[in-house]
Image (cartoon, helix red, strand yellow):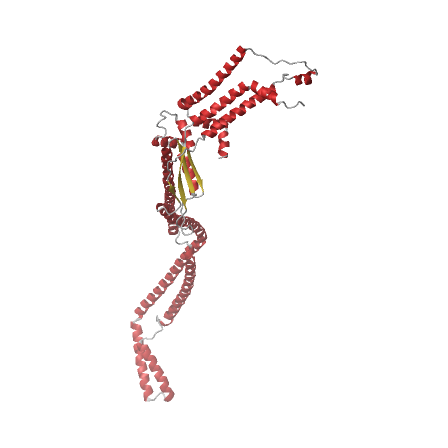
Length: 507
């Protein structure tokens, strides 16, 4: 292994110094130019406070779902949309001095400048601008928008919820009315087959059966009465066993005679008086019967007719009762089917009613939730601190950028020299001749250049350095002024190379 020869490597460095100088000057010039061209950016920040619900949730909770942090995310997405960015940039006149700037670049730059982030119970709205007053005004502008839109979003969500439940209650009211009408119509059409009247109909059937039994017994009694009346009329010519006044008087006289005969003889005057009275009464009874014969026949026929009519009426009563029993039996048989269908209709009505009651409770809650949001008693976002114009710029860090450019140039120049030396396999020292060829040289002579060659080489090096030191800053200034601001160029380069996400992860 050859010993380390520092003089040899220093000679190589000075021999390669023009390459080192060009690379270091080029990269250093780019870093210094970028540090000087990049505009100063001021960052202003407004702070919003996320306040909790003022009414305990166990007593009455708002109907707005989702936390305020989630709502801030929705609002941020709306604010950073293309149309929103262009509208706000135009409204605030952020790019007034860059008239005719491409809308895509405006959107890209606005999204870079604006940052909305949530930390704990605070929301920070930050905006970067070359003008500190513009940075503060824009940050306050977007903070006010977030505060206003958060209120509008919660109130809108509460109103939408309330309107939904109102429509549902009205719909269920209409549906419940339809089901009520179906149940009522079914009950009217089947009022004789309803299950609640089943016990009454069964009792009515039992009563009708008892009625038929009584009618049959009464008919039998009427038939017997008719036979007795006919037998009485045929035997006595009378239509009733009830005695007339003369017959009762005659019966009394006969009883009196019998009592007298038990005490006296037949020739006793008292007995004879009674006997004479009996004979007179018998004659009077015969005369009465002879004179009322036609009336008795008429009365007999009338009573027979009444009995026949009553028998016919009893038969009619039984027929009516049997017909009603048949109809009741049919309704009892049909009650099961009617009950099943009625239960289905009432179950549908009950289901709709339960839905209605549940939605009605939700409606009451939605009304209270909307009132909570209208009175700002739920979660809300309020501006805690207004953004003020910053006194010093937040970026760029010009010394750091310039030092990074110079340091990167030096490192790149040294790297180039090391690479050229690594690729160079020629023999340049006597020790290498001995090692590679196995011979020992008597003497070595360095490469000698003429004065003209030296001046030409120095002129080329100085020219290249002049072009680098002057041309690079001018080129960067031209790009920044006439094409695209340097910060946007750098941002676009980082995004296209994927370095933006890496840098963002280390922030």
